[in-house]
Every structure is written in structure tokens, then in C-alpha cells.
Amino acid sequence: MIENVLTPTVFQNALQDYLRNGADLGGTVEPANLWDAFDEVLTEIGGAQYLPPNSTSITGFVDQWVNKPGFPLVTFSRNYSSKVVTVTQQRFLVEKADRDADKTNWTIPLTYTTKTNANFSSRANLFWFDRFKPSVQFSIPENNDWLIANLKEVGFYRVNYDAQNWALIAAQLSANPAQIHLLNRAQILDDAFTLARADLVPYEAALELTRYLKTEKDFIPWYAVWSHIRDLLHTYAQTEVANQMKTYFIDRLEGIFNELGLEDKSTEENMSKLGRSSISLWICNLGHSGCYNQAVAEFRTWIRAPEKSNIPPNIKDAVYCMGIKYGSGEEWTRLWQYYLTTDLASEKIAVMYALGCSQNETVLYDYLSKITDPKSGIRSQDHYIVIRGVLGERPGLRAGLKFLKDKTHSLLEEVKKDELSNAGENLKSIISTVGAGISSKDELNQFTSILTGYQSNPTIGASINKTLTHIQERFTRSANHQKALEKWFGANTPSTTPSPTTPSQSPLPTHPTSHPTHATTQKPSGATGLRQFAPSVMVATALVVLVRFGQS
Image 1 (cartoon, rainbow, N blue to C red):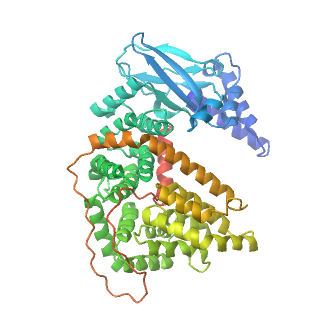
Image 2: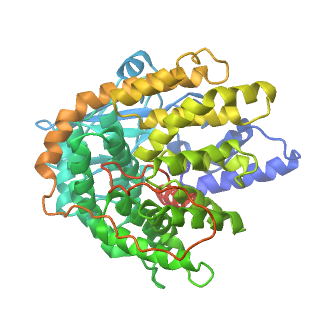
Image 3: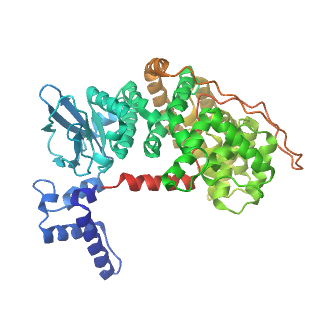
């Protein structure tokens, strides 16, 4: 944001001066040295036009962003008769009572564009919203134009609009999404669903924006919206609307999935390869038969002789996960043995996540219990991967509840004996992750019953209480939105998508290693796989997305 306000040239020159001055100071610097470097360059070039009105230094502007907690929500409300737009701000917080009580405000560099004069340059129509003013106003030429603010999302704030403007944006996305810049398509989806969760935008308005996704072939907007889709599926996992959501989003994902496929192409960009890794895992977990049948076939060919066949690196997450999800206990054991023997760190991480894809509660419980065994072969710093991998789906939630019931007391005793033990951190992580997956009162009652008596425990008490608060807040929100979601998905979910079928299991050669008893494989549930894909891919994807979101 600072670079966009000052322009890249001023920003880079100031950074160079700052680094040179820092070297002269022996490497001992503080934030004020950086702000001074900006001011010196601005003084040299006579750059007062880059500063907020009535400012003589960049320091006052940046200090409020660096030192104040949070970030603003900027709301653009239009009068469609007078063509006047009124802009207001407040600190963005999910809970209304918290928003109303917090009076934090910022001096904000705003940018916007409209349909008639579309210009997605990150400095288009840049003007300042002074933090001491309750609102600012400006006019636009056409009352039927869409308005989009925070161009290329270079500003550190969320954006809300009046209902009609949201509808105009949704109509443009459906008619021709390319008219809206890629980064703003991502921003619009992310902002709309975040605001819906905070009850600032109706979920129906956010969902209307997803209609166009059937034709969205770029990964970045999908990356921006997927966590919101995942959270909806998680929250309503045990309701009929979850199955409708699954069918609807399979239908939306098929376009980009068919575009990317499961095989890398020599001429494609890295973003397509990164997208393939995520899209394939998402749509497979939703229950797309073409995806998971191919993934399972790839896995079964590979697991018989890992040294003789290779899985394309950008679909390994999907292949490993689907192979375990629809496989037998024998295949789980073989993948576990592969984990123990491979020396490649990225492979170990991918396999740890995939082992949590099993639908067998007993297998998942035993796998989760390995974090309590120092001789299991899993490094203590990787325990979080096992926790996230196991607790991502319904069988994992049940395994997590059983783990808490069986292991909480003994793990707390371990903490008493050894303050350096990571048992306490593991417990807190499991408590919060299980809590995030609870979607029914029965599950909440089990969770509460198991942890009653530990709420004042110095190690896990705060985590329990915080998790219970979050569950109650989520239940309240889900109850408020369920009827609207059922109505919207009931009216907009295609009825032609076939129900997924479980891939047939073919026997593997006898393996001498004992393996877990395998229960009947379940068909894909209404909830998606909630585990994250392998961190190596996640971090690489996030870095690329951040770089692109930061383009000026």
C-alpha cells in the first residue's frame, strides 16, 4: 500500500537509502529510520503530492497503520438518483458488538473505477479518506454502472457496497468476468463472503457472485474463495444443504478442473501447476468421480512399486489422499511404511496429510495416537501436520473426540513431569481443531462432557473456554443463515450431477506387515476434506498469490 501511494520509484529509492544508512549505522536501525528515508526522498523530489492532505511527513500516515491493531472496513453507499457515493469506515471485526464499540479509524488511500470508465490501474482515481472525517463523497458518471474499489487490492482494507452495487458486480461477472481485473475478482469474492460471515452482507448476495465461477479458469479467484466454501461445508456438514453445496461447487469447479486436468503440460505457467494441485484435491474431495477414480488408479499403480512409477508432483496431494480415502487398511499401512523409509521432507509432509484421509475411525485414532509415542517416527515439530490431517473430516472428528476422552489426563500428567514436553501444545491444538469441526449439539455435548473439569486447568483451560465460545458463536450464525442457504442452493443447485460412487477395491499382493482393521469405506460426505494441502505447495501458492496481489 505504501509503495502504491508513493509510487514504485520513490519507494525503491527510499529503501536503497535506508539500507545504505543502515549499513553506516552498523546494521542497528528502527522503524523511524525507514520513515525518515521516505521523507528525505520526498523532500528531494518535491513529492508533497504523494502525502495525505495537510501532511508534511509520511510518518503520521504509516504510524497509524503500523501501530494500530486491525484494519478498516470501507463501505461505499450509492445514491442512484444523484449519482453520489458516500464512503464511511469502521474497524473490521466479525462480531457486531465489537465493531460498534471500537472507534479506531485510519487515513486511507482509496482507489476506484466504474464500468463506463473502467481503469484497473492501482492508482486510478486515488483520493484520501481523512481519519478525522466521518465520511467522504464523490460522484460517478452513470447510475447504472458498477463501482469497484481498492483496485488490485493494494490497500489494506476490506470493501463493502450497497445491495444494488453488489448485484451489478455479480451481473458483470456472469456476463463477462474479464472486464473486472483478476485480482479484484479474487478480492470481491473474499470480501463478500467475509462480510456475509459477519452479517454485513446477505449470504445470498455473496453466493450470487459464485455463479460465474463455472467459467473462471484462473486459479487466484478460486484460491480466494475456497476457504469460505470449505467453512460453509464444514459448518453445515450434517445437513441436507451440505449435499446441495457439494453438487453446486462440483459443477462450478468442473470448468477449471477440465482446463487444468491431472497432467502437467510443458508449456504452462507455474500458476497453472500450482492450481492443479489444489483444484484436483478440492474437487476429488467433493466427490467428482472422474477426479477420484483417476487419482485412485494412479495411487494403486504407484503403491505396488513406488520405486518403479512416479506420480506427477502437482497431483500428489490428491492421489495420495484419494488412494487412502477409498483404499484398504493394507494401502494405509504401505503408505505409512513409505513415510518411514523416504528421506525427502516434502514427501513426508504430503504423506502425513494423506494418511489422515482415511475414513476409518479406528485407523485415524491410532494414527493420531502416534504423536504420543516418541518412537513412532514422527518428529515432534510435525505433530501439527498429523493433527490437521486427521481432524479434517467427520471420521477424524470422532477420532479426535475419542482421543481427548482417552488421553487428556495422561498428557496433562506428562506436562506436570516435564514442562518442556509438547503434550500441552498438542492438546490445545487438538481441542481447538476438534472444536472447529463440531457442527451438531450432540457433538458439542460430547466435547463438553469430555472436558468438564479441565476448564480451570492452567495448561488447557483457556483453550477450552475460547473454543466453546467460538462454537456457540458459530452455532448462532449457522442457525441464522441455514434457511437462506437451503433456499438459495435449493433453487440453484443443478440436478443433473450424478451421485458419486465409491471406486471399486482391487486386492493388493500380500504384505508381511500387519495392518489396521478396515471398516466399510464411506462415500464422500457432504463436507469437503478440510485438511490443508501440503505446506510446501500452500506456501508456494500463497507467495505467488501475494506477489500478484501486490502488483501496482
